[in-house]
Amino acid sequence: MSLQTQIFEQVRAMILEGRLRPGERLPATRALSEQIGIARNTAALAYERLTAEGYIETRSSVGTFVSFQIPESALYTASQNGAPSARKPRRAVGSSLNPTFRCQAVVNPHRGRLIADFWVGRPDPDSFPRKTWAQLIVKRLRTAGSDLTEYRAQSGLFELRRAIADRLRPTRNIATNADEIIIVGGCQDGLNLVSRLMLGPGATAVVEQPCYQGAAFLFESFGANVVSVPVDDRGLDCSHLPNVRNAVAYVTPSHQYPLGVTLSLERRLELLAWAAETDSYILEDDYDSDFRFHGAPIAALKGLDRTGRVIYLGTFSKSLGAGLRLGYVVFPPEIVERARDMKTLMNNGQPWLEQATLADFMTSGGYERHVRRIRKLYLSRRNALLTALEKHFPGGEIIGDEAGMHLAWRLPSSFPPAREIEQRAIEAGVGVYTLTSGAAVGFDTSPENDRYLVLGFSSLTEREIAAGIARLAEALAPVTDRRRRPKRLVVEC
Image 1 (tube, rainbow, N blue to C red):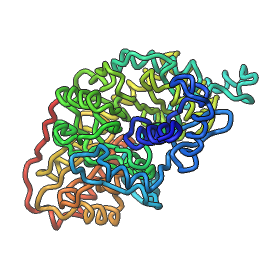
Image 2: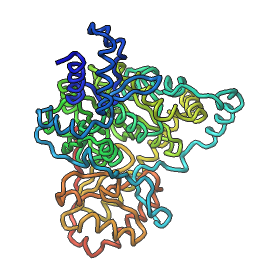
Image 3: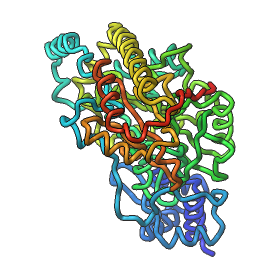
């Protein structure tokens, strides 16, 4: 076998086995030839064959990278040759050859038609600090100079990244710095960045069961094998983690979406050990951790990470508003440079003015005061919802009410399926949502999936909450004759 063929086969095998990830930069032919002591022309010919067969791609003036779309024949060969795979995992969604994409609904189709809408994930619109925000914007505009007309660092405004790092240390126990942070356009943009960096056809994405649609559908769109792991009252059941290598595990440990349970410390350590042993990464989505109502804040999973296996995703969509389109990703040091390159390919960075205004809001202390104020407000609204449910619907389990902006309600056995209740509620002018319409996806078809409703409370007043649940009770009166006292699910932290 010639040297050229040997190089081709070895690089190809590394790609199929996951040792070279989709999007990963390869050494230049000159550097490769010097490293292994061969003629540069030999390395160049091997690269040409890899390019021709679709395993790698060259980007002018940038470099050579592993292709995101690996040839179908290669995927078949990999499975025939015994490439690493899960312990007979269930393919949750999609396939690498599926040309259609699924997307979660981010805008409520019933908006404006309901007297009380318990749509999940909406901050209180009246709590946005408009006056302070306007003052900060005007101040920045006065001294903007060329900031509005020139490109800035693709990873985001340094002042904002530094402010985020300074806040993460005391609030989430994350020791990081501005250089490890990349500003993105909200959680979905952060998920997209990580997926482009680490996923491709044949890769494994581990998700919770049930899971946030925006993550699962995105992983599916990249052709990844999406493997679901069940969630119980202690969070992700780590005993069901697949026996794979080079996977990405997406989790919401502080307030699981959609059920709201908290991942126990024991399981956090098990998950971290699994990632280290399998050379995998954990993508921690900490979407609403600012709103914990009882006890001390729980340290982020990344705060426990000692092997650089956790990628941390945060957002300002829940604390300020989704309209700002601002979030951030904290990467381990060894992959942050690749992440910056990928971010550059995606969009060259986020708008300067919003970043600068948020940086000023944070460094002035205004952001922390705002979070404390709305945390107290959301606690009152959560209490109003619990009181209303207890009054009108005794007998169901309330799950995930210790934190966040929504809770899950497991319906009493005498109630009809959740999808039927959702429809009756909409007809009565009240928005309550099943797991599916509440932007979650369940990967099994058991009837249990249709026994839950999710109710967001952060954007409704206490009066609207009381009126909405009362009207829901009227709409469901024929099925609520047999009542039991409500049972609170105890979540072990």
